[in-house]
Amino acid sequence: MINPNHDLHLHTRLSPCCTDVNQTIPNLVAAARQMGLRKIGMADHAWLQSDTVPAGWQPNRAGFAVRNRAIAAITPPPVVLRGCEADTFGPGRFSIDRRFAARCDYVILAANHFHFRALVDQPTTVTPQGVGDHMIRMFLAAVRSHLANIIPHVFMPMGYWEYYEPAIAAIPDKIFLEVFQETAAADVAVEITPVYLPPPPGGIRRTWNLATPLRVLTLARQAGCRFVFGSDAHALVAMSQLRQLSPLIQALALEEKDLHPLAR
Image 1: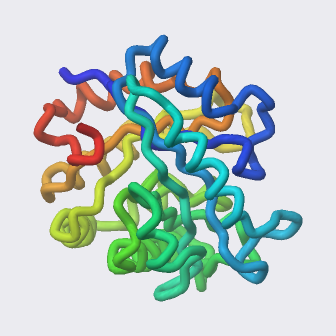
Image 2 (image 1 turned 180 degrees about the vertical axis):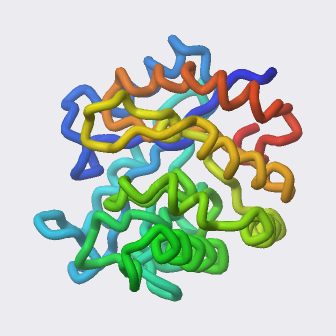
């Protein structure tokens, strides 16, 4: 069984949702060295224009230039990549353009930030089938964008957590396999993240059985997708959650060949 030796989904203070004052590039690098990670990636949220930014946040193009200069000054190990996390608002509508993407080492393109109600397309009908169909539509929009290198926290209906298990159950294996075959053909990686782990009962999100994300990831592997690991850490302590991925890694029987080249 392989162990996560990289983390390609880290946020710094450049991401407005990252409120940990310790979430700086030097601290993230130090934490990665302590964990024995050989590669990490800064994947801050990227919005280019004021009309594509969540309420109360600001466009942050200039901030990326400052951040990337700081990354360039890092001496490996670990290797530090200049990434971003962009958003799919709907088919053909994204928070970044190809020019910005070309300046990044990789783009994580979210397809399910449905909690950004005013920006991201919402399900036409809020039912398990409606939410499931909408996730398929948005996921394919990201895969076909020619922007995405990685799609994070796949098929998790953020903002509609109560529909997670029934929505996934409403999507047949055949549809998942077709979608993931297209993903593999586009050389877009699927992220394996602690976000898949069932939250404790009584929290903000209704809990679920690990079998639900495991089914999705198993079908992705069966279809030929390759994977990367990402903690989605907004605080230093969250990086250590990569170690909690062992049940998923073991159940999927992941090998080195299953990792995307970005992770190697």
